[in-house]
Amino acid sequence: MQLKERIENLLEEARKIRLQTTEEAEQYRIRLLGRKGEMNELFEEFKNVEPAAKKEIGQALNQLKNAIQAAILQAKEQCSRPEGRQPADMLDLSRPADERTGHRHPLSQIREEIFRIFGKIGFDISDGPEIEDDWHVFTALNFSADHPARDMQDTFFVERSGSPKDVLLRTHTSSVQIRSMLSQPLPIRTLCPGRVYRNEVVSARAHCFFHQVEGLYVDKNVSFADLHDTLLYFAREMFGSDTRIRLRPSYFPFTEPSAEMDIACTICAGNGCSLCKHTGWVEILGCGMVDPAVLENCGIDPGQYSGFAFGMGVERIANLLYRVNDLRLFSENDRRFLAQF
Image (cartoon, rainbow, N blue to C red; front, side, top):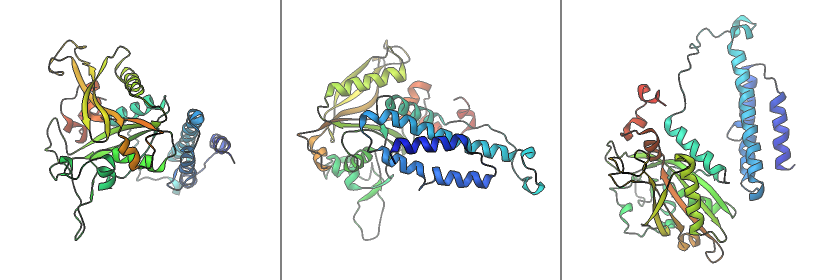
């Protein structure tokens, strides 16, 4: 059965199904949304969909997931109401009051907005482990054996008795880019979000963990102009249609040429203020063309393919949009702070 037909059949089922008990709702959830559920199978098949059909199939998958969640939520809400429970022994008197005070964390809101913006131009999402090996985090990305980022001052290594120091907490989600290039068919157009760890002193401007979203595009004839236009599109979608950007030459081991991207300061509109240190510009991400050596490390012929990559800190974007001046606030779970978003 074709992928599209399977999605349509499950969507019709989700719209018609009437789950009578919480047990039925849970069984339905496991079958469709569990780790080995049908939705995971569909998303695995989605990776092999032709680029021209990805947008249509991706929208259908999201529509299906929403319909499944709606059916489960409707069943649980019905069963939680006393009038919906006829037998007396079904009434759970120990259930807490239905006080709904939570909402999406500000970092989750920013991350999902990034997903939405890049999803409109065909980027999907890839995931990878937070505990990684040296090859995926450093070696495959062109980090030399004596690169400072390998030093204990920057990286949290995992000690194992009698074993080499080759397991660590990832310092960037570029490791997911490597996994994507090793496992996904070409062309690749994906975002790599996740939490990363660095041995930093915790302060208002730095933390030992933070969140990144990196992007990767590999295809034939990908150019630096493609990178520029993609990032300009992102900046104007995220910060406003009149946002200006500039790319400054920089250095990263895994891209060549490399650049850092600034946007015109969102506070002073480029006129100069304390946030932008009176330069009119604020740096928001690093980027560049994927180094041919990195492509070769992943079994991709750099004579046939090229690509670009970029990476941004979610907290950095949140700081600019929400004007939060202390990174620690994002991880302290202070309801007074979170209620503002």
